[in-house]
Length: 173
Image (cartoon, rainbow, N blue to C red):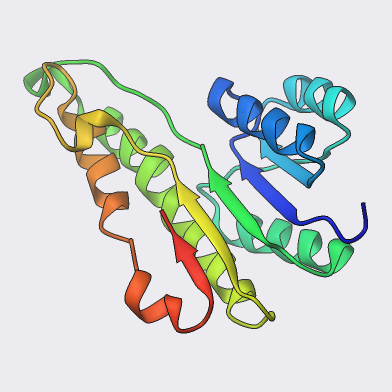
């Protein structure tokens, strides 16, 4: 198990994040899950053997700290999956500034914080690594009442920095 790849799942206490962590664990990978729901994280960790960290991914210093702790304890970080986010289904004309700001923070800011922290570590390790940012079909198609989430998720899609980072061994999707 010590030679197994190390994957960090941000937003692991939610449905997609937990399913991702379970899949990676079932394949024999070392898995670290983060999230805000400590009860769900503890249950997932007990279920899968994953390590768990409470994390508010909107906080860039907290993200950096967790990423460095994971890298220090495992000696590597092969892959990161960002599943942190939220969804706001409401017509644009009814969305308040606070709701819009919260949607951007929960989806776009978290994606950037994860991308930046992962890239900083992966650029310095042999073999680089992989970064997956979860998005939404709303980012590509016009869906009724999805304007705020579409804006946030579309923003994270532009960070497919394949050309520049591929030379450093980092793949993104």
